[in-house]
Amino acid sequence: MESNFLKIISLFLIILSISFLQPSPALGARITDVRYWSAPDHTRIVIDLTEPIQYETFLQENPPQFHLELKGTSIHTSKKEMDVKDPLVTKISLIELGKNKVKLILHQKRALSANTFTLKPYQDKSHRLVIDLIDVAQEKKEIEERQKQKEIKPKGTKIVVIDPGHGGEDPGAIGPQKTMEKDIVLKMGEKVVHLLNQNKEIQAFLTRKGDYFIPLEGRIKIAREYGADLFISLHADGSFNPKARGSSVYCLSLSGATDEAAKILADKENTSNILGGASLRPVAFAKDPNLSQILLDLMQSNSMKESFQFAETLLEDIQTVNPLKYPSYRQANFIVLKAPDIPSVLVELAFITNREDERLLNRPDFQEKMTKTLNATIKKYFGL
Image 1: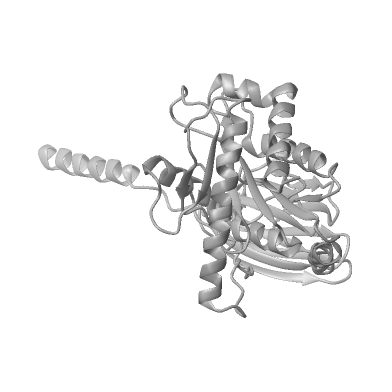
Image 2: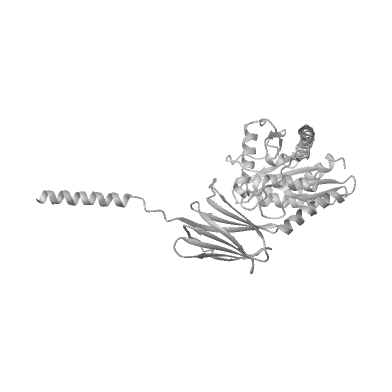
C-alpha cells in the first residue's frame, strides 16, 4: 500500500516538474523604444517592438492627430509622453487601453498625410513599426523648388549634388570612439557645398540637410530634379579589420563587381534601405518612361565614362590628403549610382572603424583639406 502511494507521489512530482519546464504563454509584443526624426517635408516616428503586431490607424481632423491602436501589445519604455521639437509634431503619447492594447497618438500642428509600415528584424534592429507623417504641400514645394533651380540656372552653370550617405535610423559605420558615419558625411557635405557655391559657374545642393533618412532611389530622384551634372555620394568606410584604412572611390558596374571587396561594400551600402527603413511609397526611379531603351543605354554608357574620368582625377588629388585604400577606382552595383544621365561616384573618405582615420575625420584641418580637394577636383572636371 505504502509502495503504491510513493509511486503516485513520484508520478505527481514528475508531472509537476514537466509543467514548470513548459514555456509560459506568450505575453504579446512589447514596445521597447520610440524615436523620431525631422525632415523638411515629413516626420518619421519609429516604434521598436519585440514581436510583429497588428494595428489599426485613423486620422483625426480637429485637433489634427494621428491615432494608431496596437493589439496584443504592452508598453515597456518610459517614453509614454514625449514633447517633440519638430516642425510638424508637438507631442507623442503612448496610452494603455487595458490588457495588451496600446494607443499611440501623434499630436500634429496641422493636417498631414500618413504612411505606416512594418520592418522585420535586421542586424541589430528589432521589429519596427514606422509612421511617416507627410506634409504633402511642403513635399510638393520641395520638388518644385528643385525643378525651378534646373529651369532658371544661368547658361553654362554646372549643378553638383552632394549626397551625405545614411541618416536617421541608419547611422552607417560607427568608429571606436562612437563617431557616426551619418554625422561626419553630413558635416563634410555641408562644407563641400559651401565651397562649391563660392564659384559663380557652379550651383551645389545637398540631398539631405539634416539627420533623416532618404531611400537610395529617392536620392537619385532629387539629383535629377535639380538637373545635376555631377552626383557625389559621401561615405566613411567601415571594416571588421580595425587596421584597414585609407580613402577610395567607387563607380557603377552594370555587370559584376571589380572584386569581392567592391561587391561586399556595394551590398553593405545597398542595405541602407533596410536599415533606414525605405517606405513602400512609390519613388520615381532614375529611368524616364518617355525615353527609349536604346537612348537610355547610350546615356548610361556616356555617364559611366564621365564617372570613370572624374574618379581617376579625384584619386590623383585625394591621395595628397589621405593614403588610398586602392590605387584605382572600383566598380560594383551601387543603387545610389544608377542615374542613367548623371555622372556619379561614391567616395569613401576614410575608414571610420580605424582609430587613426576616425581621429582624422573628426579633425577640422583634415575636413578642410578633404573638402577643398573635392572642390578643386570638381572645378578641374568642369574645366573651370
